[in-house]
Image (cartoon, rainbow, N blue to C red; front, side, top):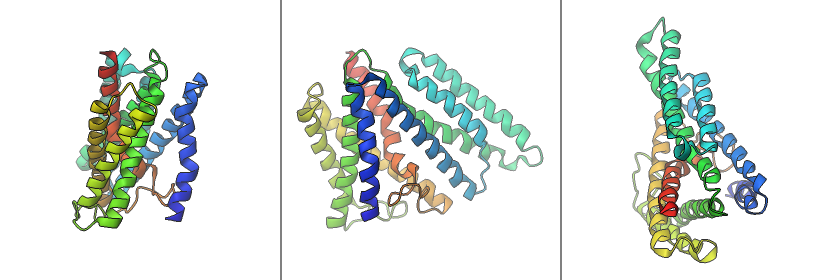
Length: 281
């Protein structure tokens, strides 16, 4: 527990600075982009490492090159300004992976489909989903401070929901949620996380985000809490399938970057598209 708190005490101020500073120093937006690039690259590395435990031969080189191209497109907010470029990048990723794996498995094609599958899943799961957070950071320059408020809301709700679920589960947890996937998760923890998310969503409206009234901030926070749990369960299933307790040990007390990204990745597109529709209306 102490190690977990110490890690958070070091990491959270850096994350908070990357979110808040651009409101005062516009160039500081690149701090968040750099952190995101590091986090997604580490998450992709951890994902490919998990697949190795099952002897699934992902083509890491193709995965990293495709991820770098996709990441750049999200930096320039291609989903809004050049959606065709994103589709083209995804098409090239699929074609490139198939070509690469065709030559790679010339002596044994029995594992080719698995290799193609884990390579593409890594790119789509980590970089494509996570890229929406980068687009949220860089894609709302026409609305002063909106990206700062969106990301502050996002992380406050997600981390608040995680904390609520953890403490509610510890104090009240009796009924297992899905023990075959995640033995530690309980129904009481799920409820605690949802309640905490709703509370932090409302707090965001009062504290710094009046542009997002309660009738939107609270339901959005609740949806994010539920989707976050689904993301956590999906990542837990991946780890169980590979026989790993944590994706890695890079974050003492927390596991790997992928263990911290799981709920964020599933929610990133939700935040981005909600903001695009709501604030462009």
